[in-house]
Image: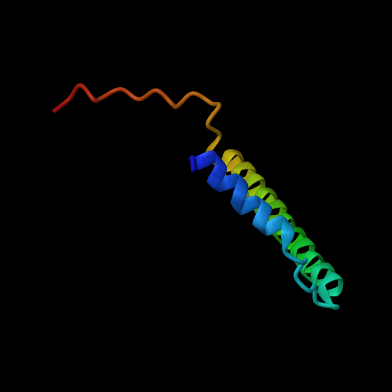
Length: 81
């Protein structure tokens, strides 16, 4: 038998067997898991927004104190000494 025939025979064996039993509460468990994942995604999104707002605030405070857009004052070394 070739490799393709082996695979085809394996698939036919799988399709010829009866379907496995499905738990009765499968839909409820899937819905609970999906709701948990949605809540987690919402929390993560909120935390990222809070971090982004905090970063913008810190940058604005630093920029207002440091004034990086202004040229530094010109100082020349003393000629004496």
